[in-house]
Length: 336
Image 1 (cartoon, rainbow, N blue to C red):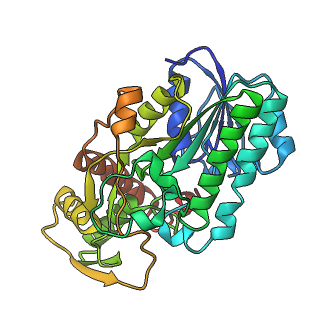
Image 2 (image 1 turned 45 degrees about the vertical axis):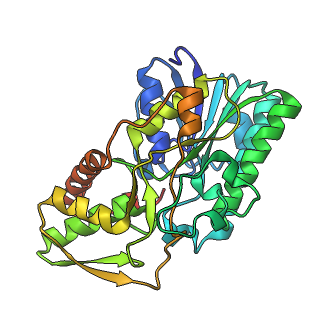
């Protein structure tokens, strides 16, 4: 367990960053938290934390400022969202490479010895994800390089940058390829939300409005594996404390289609069945994506614990409460 360290978390106002801050704070660490979002847009905001609101980490001078006298750095920051966002904002997504590069330069200058980078399954070669149900993607499947355009290229390039800073300057890096992380305290409306949160919201709205239909992007047959946030944080910290320095999958191997996920959420809500209005012209991403967890089991002795239905129940319940509190005014959750 990491304890009694001064840790910088970049992207702390976001979904995964907020949960990571909570865990490391509870474990007895001193946290410096930075995010480009103003205070009112942070998903979780903790006392006894040195918070830097509205701090743009694409500015190297900001990176230099917050990395002074820091033990470890976790880079959880990026400009991203669900498929609706990343397919239509590729230039914005690519600019996140500046965050990682400038943070690594600042870490070198301030003699920080250990650095974590949050990568993504979007770094994997698209040609290996063209069927609905696929074999799990192994870490070597990122090459030859052909990742998701924009966001995936940023992640793959940034992984490489981490590797070379380790080789050239001795900074110990840890890189996790996250596979569709979901759970409470994240975006569920406004265009940046991912499938689990979006579908929970749609089912909740249908139930509240007594409607019997929901809109589904694509034919609903596209598949993914989804990892609950608590498992993500556990896997992240286990990786960080290990001596393994190559990219590794942090995901589940419980592969489901979007249609299957809707059925699970319907059962959670108590709705028998909603009519699906399939919107075939909407962004859908790759046809199938699944995490192969052989390597993470071998090098970290780690596997996910939370089954999809259990995690979706927690996510659904949280979104239900939030929509009751805010009605149709969900602006706090539209920026991630």
